[in-house]
Amino acid sequence: MGRVYTIKIKRISKQVLADFPDAFSDDYEKNKELLKGILEVRSKKMLNQIAGYITKLKSSKSEIETADEAAEKE
Image 1 (cartoon, rainbow, N blue to C red):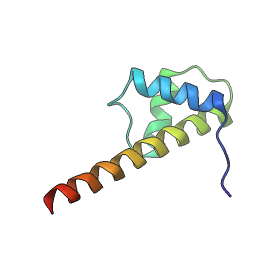
Image 2: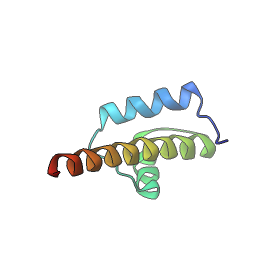
Image 3: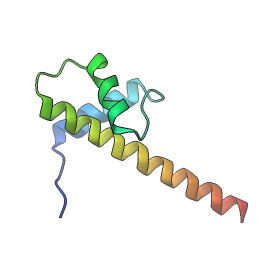
């Protein structure tokens, strides 16, 4: 089983995505660098978890969009 993100990580990630919807992508390293400029997080672990969760959300969203586009073409 995978690790579960805490409510705090999910809440912060969703808030950042709501404030900057087009700034993030499915690239973890780019998201981490963007977060360093946006958030003031003291813990490296928390920053990495937030970046990972945002990456997960963006990549799953892009997978859904590509599946919808493929279904529309058929």
